[in-house]
Image (tube, rainbow over all chains, first blue to last red; front, side, top):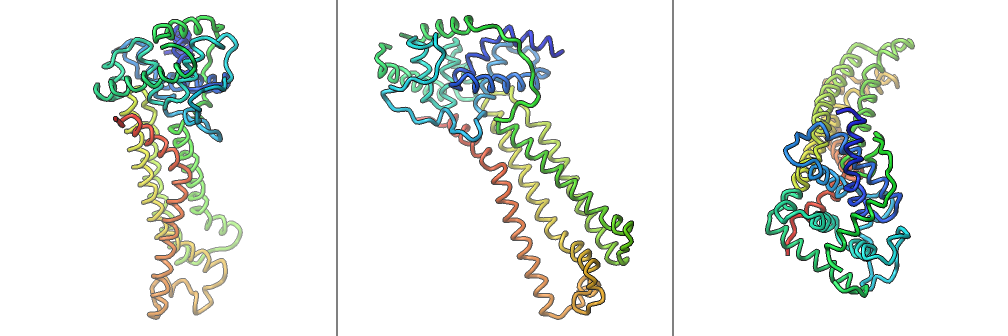
Length: 165
Length: 217
């Protein structure tokens, strides 16, 4: 595949890049760095995509694998940042995200570990237990346990912000 | 609020974003332990290969400058350095095989990370084995070189031929064995510390991810 064809394909699925990078990174600069890492990894792996699954599923897999193994040098990892239960400190966010439900969701997501972030994102995107299990290489039972636990955690955290969930 | 609302807002927020022109930056991957380990290994191998080539041609450089090593010292030096270069080339082949295998990010998360950890550990063990084997070989050519450069050939105590053919007293043999052991153990210890510093923290990071993946209540 030629570089321009690849970039057109990425452009068509750019939503995946933005959603994954937003789940794993808070600042716009870090999100952009992560997106570039994902594009780099996709470009290196594109030759191995045989069309056995949907391109979006394959892209999610590479994007999530890259994000899970990604960490920032010389800084504390974002998913290791200690979050106080009342979450009263609003982080740097896009202006149009402030006060939105999504902003509260992302604040809650910050407390999750990298695996939980992947599970909840795939769940929101409509993947089934079995599909999530297949993407991450887990058993269906383990995935179900983790998903329920993560959903519960998110609900409780959003409730502490004054939202009904 | 529910997860459907979140999905809807997530899609809306992505649609609102300005359409960027994407590019591929081949310098990326600097924050990824997989890429960091691979880049560190490649740099290290290039450095070691450069060192070995330099050591291999050193007697010829000396010869060009008018210092001709005696036959025994020169041949011993070259034979041991050639053996070292052979071991290094085997390690380089192992590393090339590792680099080719280590970009497999499109299998499932657990398998891709576990395979990677296995490969990196295997490669590091090969590296340690190479270093330990080198530590047993290197003192001999180094002594040959020092013996020549410092004029020890004329000294009855430090004469290379006497040491190399083990025409030594019992005390001197004990000194040789103990020195060898100390040198090898120190070399192994330094290599372990070095590999842990360069690679260990990244491997630990990946192992933690696998633990998070496999952990259930």
